[in-house]
Amino acid sequence: MRKLTYYISATLDGYIAGPGGEYDFFPFEGEPAAAILAEYPETMPTPARVPLGVADRPARHFDAVIMGRGTYDPGLAVGLTSPYGHLEQYVVSRTLTGVDPAVTFVADDPVGVVRDLKQRDGLGIWLAGGGRLAGVLLDEIDELIIKRHPIVLGAGIALFAGPHAPVSFTRTGEVSFDNGFTITSYAKAAA
Image 1: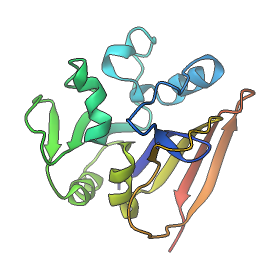
Image 2: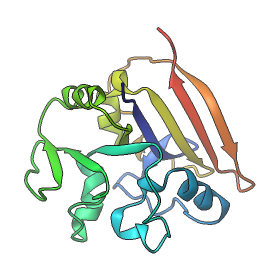
Image 3: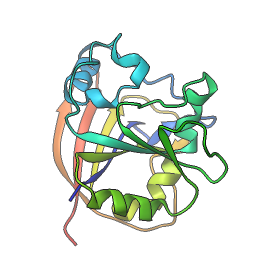
Image 4: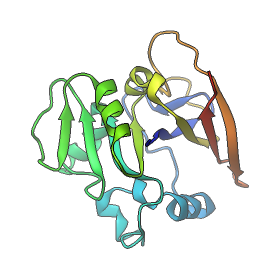
C-alpha cells in the first residue's frame, strides 16, 4: 500500500508560511539544497527541473502530489497551472476547477481521494501543503519529513491546523547541516 508523506519546510516555531502565505524566507542553497535535490528530485516544480539539473532524475519517493489551494496559488499567479507535471497532481479547492487538464481538482472529500490513491500501485503520495489540509488528512498521514529551518516567524500558517486530535509519530531519521537546517523523518506510531 502507498504511503501519504507530509514533506514540508517549517520554521523552528512550526510555521510553513507567513501570515499572508509568504515562503521566500526559506533559503534553498548550499549543502541542504544539494541533499534535497539528490534525495527528493521529484519535489522540484517542473519548470525548475532543467535549471536545477534534475530533469532526467527518476522519482525516488513520490509519483503523486496533493496540495491545498494556498499551496497551488503562488504558481497559478504566475501562469503555472501544472506545477508538478511530472507527477499525478491533485489540488483540494471548493472553488477552483478545470484550470488545467493535467491537474485533478478535489472539491470535497480529500480523505476519500487519499484513501483511493493509497490503494493504487505506485510510489508514495506527497502532501505538499498546507496546514489546514494536513489537519484534515492527519489520520491518513503515514510519514512526516520536516525540513526545519533555523528561523522563527512568530506568526503564520501552522504546520497543522485543525481540531485538537493528538497523533503520535516516531522519529526514524535525521540529517543535520552546519547552518542549523535539519531534515527529520517520522513514521506514524503503532496504535
